Image (cartoon, rainbow, N blue to C red; front, side):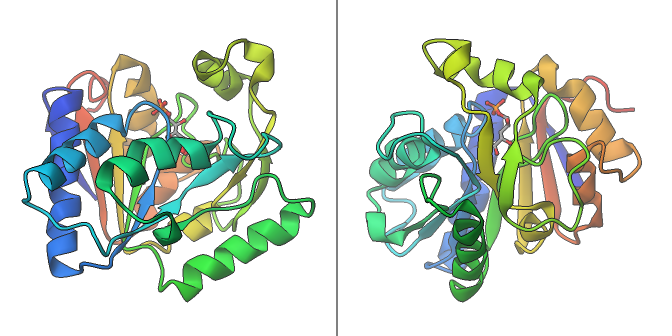
Length: 242
Ligand code: F6R
């Protein structure tokens, strides 16, 4: 695991965007696993700027979603499909057909989860998975005590995560209780994992993930088991590293 400490969130975003651009030069049709939430936004903005400047060609890139709320109507502005369309697919000028994601409004959620794992495998697997980290140490929405071998499945959000995500909704009650998330085992199949964390609020989770024991209580600690992980943290999020 490589840990890179950068000054601030824009610097972290620029570094991850450079890494994605380098991958796309090597492999133009790479499958990029994207996260939602606030942390990755500077990455998507920096990558879109590179596209506008003509320094990277993303026209053959493919996108895969990490997770999705269950039960939001299709097209809801805070469904992760809508967020990825708005923040990644449209700014990069990608075709919606190049975008894979789980169906959070499926009647049979379990079948939708299994179908998504199959779709990822049939697409050749994720080349670079961008991850954020929850204040409780989650990756994707694998909350504490998730199996380290888990596959894509439905999970219940913790009270902490629902409170953390309430800022995206008009009221805290509107945050869904359930999500479909790639499992930890699924995430670990990506060829390169890039965890980005910014801000003091992530410092404890980052320290436990990077320097603590591998434990289901801190799902992000499972990254220690992967052979190619880059953790990019700003100075505030690095504040509790030894
Ligand atoms: C989102 C996701 C989550 C977030 C995490 C941090 O797709 O998988 O694990 O990355 O909750 O969210 P932010 O970046 O908003 O602090």
